[in-house]
Length: 418
Image 1 (tube, rainbow, N blue to C red):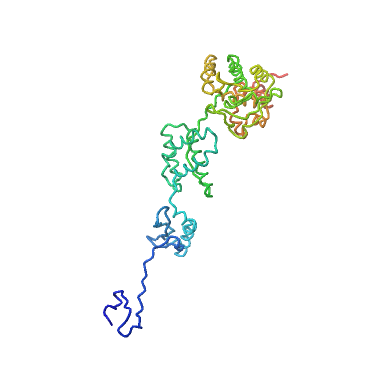
Image 2: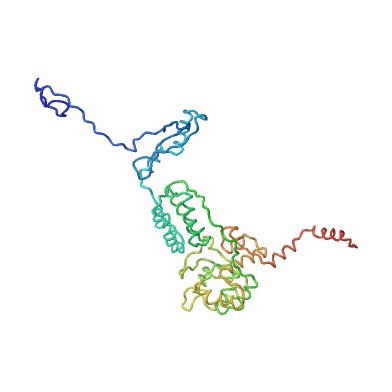
């Protein structure tokens, strides 16, 4: 045979010396195949004995990486469980983590989604559905307080420890506890929305949030309201009177149109609000409501409007809506200072109205509907009691045993009784 026909060379002659019809069989060529993650079979792990302890080893997929990482866990001591029991325990761990499932493999093949990706999607899809004030403030807060910390962090790797580090940083920067709570709620809402969009279970964290201060919200008593209304001039006198008689939010007062008043039935239809000079929808769905007013308030409004049948009830000289800042600066704060009472904003009228209704025995559900709250719990947060009212209630509801105890004390002192 020709030496060039040696199988070691890999060459195959077309004809041999014995004859042209005899063809030598070719050596099959087999290329080394690449390992595909999608074709890997499930794993049961490996159990080894080290220092009288059963150690279980198995592989887990890492998002964004082709190569798996090896993980080791302690299964128990040799004198406590047998090797078959250790293998069964390891298999239980592997099954619980789902490393053999197609879903786990699919997640590992995808590039890890970081928080900035979630924020981008939330701002483009969810944010346009929210209130104008949220659309204005949320992107600024996210950019300043959330993206800087969580931005490049993969979503699946955000743990409670990361959240607590973030909260500690916010507190170190001097943010108020209420602000920290609001930022945490925003972060949680964004992450929950992301989970819902991907049909994933809602993530849970266990943050250590700062305690909220128990300082009572400033509210105007009936006596303070009377003083403020008496001193106020022009449309501010009417504005403060209506605020105290209805409990409307400042934006709802500024958004009132003459057409919203049914003074014959003594009803105010709340249909809009004002935010940063723009007419927007009420704060919540319950904000759309009919507020009943008393006869005196109806007369005050009628006198204020005169013959007007359209336009805003309260407005600037240019016909634009009032702003909370201007009302406080030009009227309410100077009045409080002249009366030597603690400053309060427009919201203090709302707190005062709710407190007055509650103290007067109005049904809680009526109060809730009047002020547009979604729950009685919220209404309770707006309810305050002054010292005189508390003292009157305590004395009026004193238990009957008080008289009996007084008589016993008198007998013990040797007093004579008729």
